[in-house]
Image 1: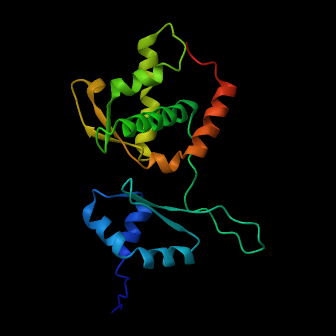
Image 2 (image 1 turned 90 degrees about the vertical axis):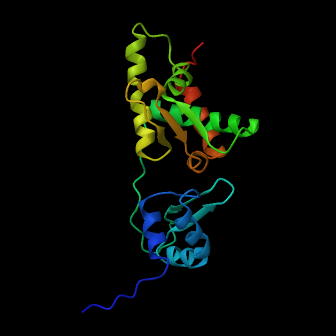
Image 3 (image 1 turned 90 degrees about the horizontal axis):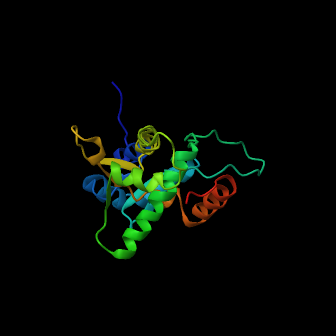
Length: 196
């Protein structure tokens, strides 16, 4: 017979290990805020950090870079995903779209259809001979951002995928913060001929 000695915040910890917790996940969010001190302490002991952004309504775990201080190096828990050029460009496009949306103050969630996302992204590619193939190719960066939780399908349209609607998750502001945004823009400017 085993003795269970599970911490009362274990469900929140395990949920965080699966990914971002958003405010709309009310039960987890409430418990997260209630147990945040304990979670901070626990995660700190294993070399992780809890980041809570109450203004944008999300929380996630990050692993700081190992410091070269003579201590035993910790293995990386979370693999850094290398995005393709198109997916990186889409991150920039969505990050800026979210900024514009926030400035207008039209709500708290930004929704874009697949067609709107592709139209914004297509501006950065030279006019290709086969436009329909180019638009089809733009499904790849969208799927890439879906897989890492930056986009979420909010309304499916099985008859017309172009009308499928996505929510741009606010975690993009943490993944692509202002500093990172400028860094990526600079790199892109060095490698890309902007499209007219």
